[in-house]
Image (cartoon, rainbow, N blue to C red; front, side, top):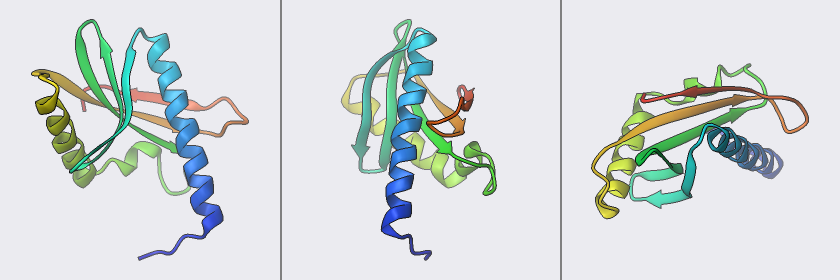
Length: 123
């Protein structure tokens, strides 16, 4: 397992928080209402739960400052998608939600520049 230093962990947390706020800004501009964020389930964290036109969407946010390790969306592999499905189902079961979709918002850039944002819907 790769060790990370405290400074790289802090950097990753800063970029993660910036990415989530950037994603929320995009969602609100598209007419979504953010219901909750950073919800922990037995299957992992849900970054954002949003509602639009009475329909729930569970959103995974991936933010990277560069694409040297691949595009942000590349981090959402089959294992991550499986965790997303299980986490969304757990949340839906406890909130009487019968239909929903899973989205990914990929963000490449940094707080000091205009980021490239891609919203992958219904993955």
